[in-house]
Image (tube, rainbow, N blue to C red):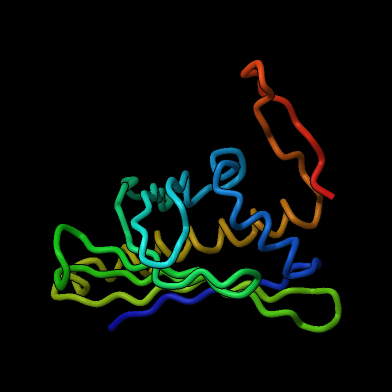
Amino acid sequence: MKEIRTEITINASVEKVWDVLTNFDEYPYWNPFLKWLKGKAILGNKIRVRIAPPGANAMTFMPKVLKYEKNKEFRWLGHLFMPGLFDGEHIFELTDNGDGTTTFVQREQFNGILVPLFKKMLNVNTLQGFELMNKALKDRVENHLPIMQVNKKGRLFASLMI
């Protein structure tokens, strides 16, 4: 097994962090690593995810949601081609630090016979992708950056997240 783990402290409540993290429609506007996530994040559902690690090819896959606990944890399990070759359990965890801040942990556990072949990519590109996403999430939450929305006429407009 191989694990990559990153964490960052965000100066906001777990509720605010969760709201941004789980607003998947907004990912294309701020998330440098997870370019988009489509589908309902409900236990047992398959979702579609597009990742773009820096310096590596982007990939689209269809993981299964293993856990979706509001304001606490979201995790999925994806496979490359078929189970057992290259499996990744991606985990987002939020911890309320009791002082108005949240610790955001992003980690992934990799298993399968092909994992050793991807070790360098995981240690460099994927790890950088996690770190970039963590920083972008922190910036988006702390700086109340605009949330892009589409109005009834199909026009894009920005509103502030408060």
